[in-house]
Length: 153
Image (cartoon, rainbow, N blue to C red):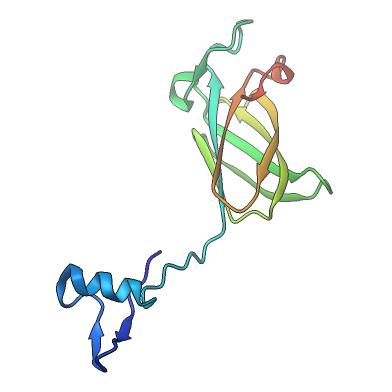
């Protein structure tokens, strides 16, 4: 998040960074008074594609509503030590954002349930690597009988 500061310019006056127009903003920016710090770490976003016809041998990617997924349970596990770093049971979503995970490689285990609470969808998306910057992945979630055939794209 960019933050504008109050700066003292060469002519000795203190000037708010937003007063005086674009030229002053440019001068202040060049003087090093603008502070563009990013206090948040990287975000790992995983877009989820649910199998719309879990009873079929063909995977048809869809969203929660079109696949009739009611709730989901997910677990994010570090590959190097097997430690679970995040998990949740929640209403179905078409994506998951993990804010500020440690750099490393992860696996996402995800299970989807229909409105009766029956486990219908399941898969494991592995090789989800986070370094310094935001990263995005896609994960296909098949029915429980074919879950090993799906996963990260």
